[in-house]
Image (cartoon, rainbow, N blue to C red; front, side, top):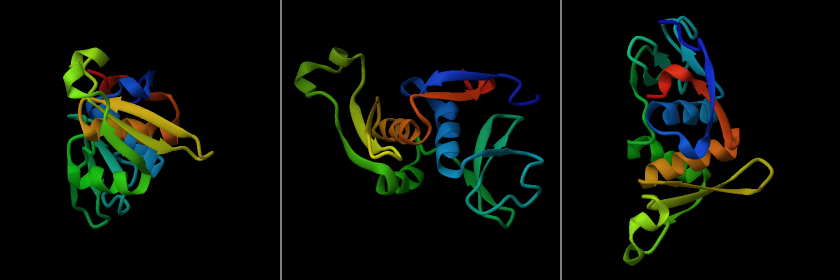
Length: 150
């Protein structure tokens, strides 16, 4: 299946799953590689998409890679927090009930290139942080491959 057949504009606040991880990779590296881009040894720190199963992989430049999912892996989200996130907190007092904000439990704030603070929300700390990074680096609307939205 050819990827990037159609790009869809999505609000950063609505991104989740592999589409969110794809957007974070674009914010971090500037581009997600799809084979044959990057060849058989993609550059260290680049992120590649396996267009057979739509999984993302963080490359080490020597032929090895690890699954890329900063929205679910603290080992990848942690460095994003250190580099980009100004605050990460509970979005609403538990006594008010999570339903008060439509299930949103956490907020994260990051600064964009102009120094403006961008706040994002999520049902986990990692999702909130990833959305904040995407909005700060790429904007409130992000183009993602339609195939990644499921």
